[in-house]
Amino acid sequence: MCELDRFADCSIIGAAVLIVIGLSWAEMEERKSWTTLDWLQRLNYSHELHNVTSGDGYQLQLQRLPRLGARPVLLVHGLMGSSLGWLCLGPAKSLAFQLHQRNYDVWLANLRGSSSYGRQHVELTDVMADFWRYSFHEHGAYDLPAIIDHIVALTQSEAAEQLNETRAHQVLLIGHSQAFNAFLVLCALQPRFNQHIQLMQGLAPLARLHRQVRFDAAHVRAIMKFVKKREKAKKFELFAPGELRKLCNKKRELCEYYTKNLAGSAQSNKKLLEIFSYEHLLQGGSARELRHLQQIWKSGDFISYDYGPIENMQVYHSVEAISYNLSQISVPIILYFGETDAIATPEGVHGIYARMLSSVRGVRRIASSKFNHFDFLVSSDVKTLVNDKLIEAMEKFFEGKLPYIIE
Image 1 (cartoon, rainbow, N blue to C red):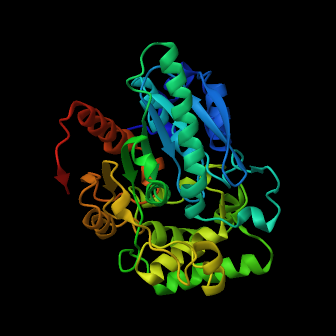
Image 2 (spheres, rainbow, N blue to C red):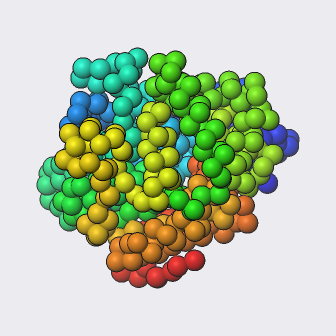
């Protein structure tokens, strides 16, 4: 099958299709460098831009594919990601387009640090060390509250104008990878959001990492050595936009080694580095995010960032970092995992289920012998393997007919 959306070499038939849809080979290749707004503008896709400010001053841009009065769905990216991850395969395959075509009101989040829609602050700039002092804790404690409150308030107002208020009080949430961590922090620290989120679907979700990932201590040490080296050089951002792509082009074998060991075997290992071909797909992110994940991996528990005893007392009023109270979370949850994901392993996802039995309504395995952490964004089969199943489960949930499946 010709993989148009992944820019594979296609036959004469594929070339004819490109001509029909108005894209040349050069334009197909150019799409790798498109931003979220490039996608929406060049496809002439109806969209809105919304700006929100977090409680600690980060100014974040949301993109919306509007359908007034429809159910609002918020898509939240993971570590080093942005809203582009939900668009980069185009209208035929990417989840944001697919949801909009199914008459959902689609919102795309950009958490702090994402390029270029999460790089503003009321006082700081992204060249200052203080700008990058955050992890998924701040995503859940500050970014998501500001974003969800904005969506709920606006859709309630729109619904009131249309005399149709039944669907506007809650948001459907879909998150990839570390977005699930942010969701857990949000609902554990601010239980009121349990009432504002109708359903959470977590793709490759994370929580506790100890003995639940497929890479070893040597890989973790190598990552932390890299983090320390960047911090020593006063580089608190993990990767500037485009830096990963250049690095992987220059040191392909090394990049492929770490990608396979840290993300897992992909559907097509020959295209394992495909995700780095997209200029803006992976970038941004704070070095502290990796430090926080390393602390969770080492502690064996799902804890807040550990500043050390003195600063912990100032921040948490406790000598130790806090363990998030997951019993506070009542939002219905469906979890999805890939068989060869090295980060969100089957064991790790089932570990989340075991700790959240009252909330998790299903654990779904992606029906592919190889499916890794990034296949949820760039697999050529993501529509049939993930998106169609996700939408089907969501609609069965609305009907009260969602089967309880633990795979």
